[in-house]
Image (cartoon, rainbow, N blue to C red; front, top):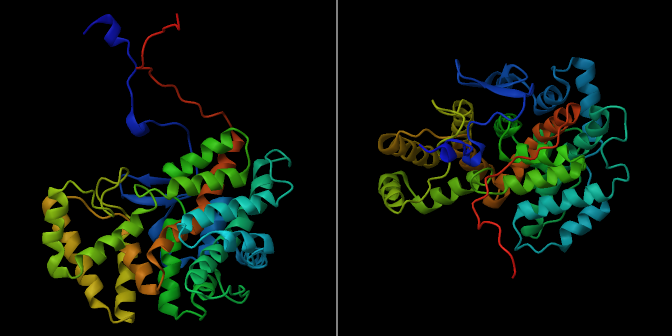
Length: 379
């Protein structure tokens, strides 16, 4: 190896293996393969905590006591209604646009209406970010629900302050108070999607925050990153695949054709988990309860057939998007709405990371290796 080549910097495509900062918000424990929120295994949180409790945990670092939870719930519920200008902005977007485009635009409108949107206006990052994070968390479900309804010619439903976060989300979408099994499965999915360390959308939010922009810009950028099929859009792609396959009997043939064509099979594999996504068993159980509730054993049969075929052929395990896609389908959500649901949960994690970034901020500005033409001149 020449001295020149030895001095060339190592390039980590996709920042794979690069540790760019420290975080106290979440991690994966390699010994147990568990995703931890502030140290708590997410499967334990999903088993016994409301989404509101988990959001509080991500923002405050500890689970709330009874008084703190009641105050938090009241503050969230009173901000659920969409302002008129946000409603008008949504109405002006053609229904041919993807729901993530609607969500991204609506967040920008909410931000434009906030006269105190900039960072640094209050003594601490938490005091600056938290009220805006709570507002976005309260209003994103209203945006997602209204967008699905308008695509079916149905009017906006006002939120209900007597329902918890998950139940109100379902009520605003479908116009009925959900049955307990459905509301609980939805709650589980929201808890599992709430946070996942330095994923692409979270890192996007932190990069934007590092410039001392504002919360709404950070969340808008994160929504743009989440839209991609290699990130949040994977849960939509799972349902598209299920529709192509049709029945469990077709799963192996479909997979063989997909692999032969070098198609990426969405919903499988994860850069962080080497022994399977720790969130999958919890969401798979929720999917099973939904399939039983709706008398749809065919969904589980297809799920299992494709999972087993993928394991046999490639040894690749499913990620959270694999069970969440068919779960949202059974609940009645349109497939393009799946990723906005993901965003409505993950906004809690994004904003927790914005606070953390600002608390010890350094502008995120990586280097690159130039491989273009050497210096040249016009004459």
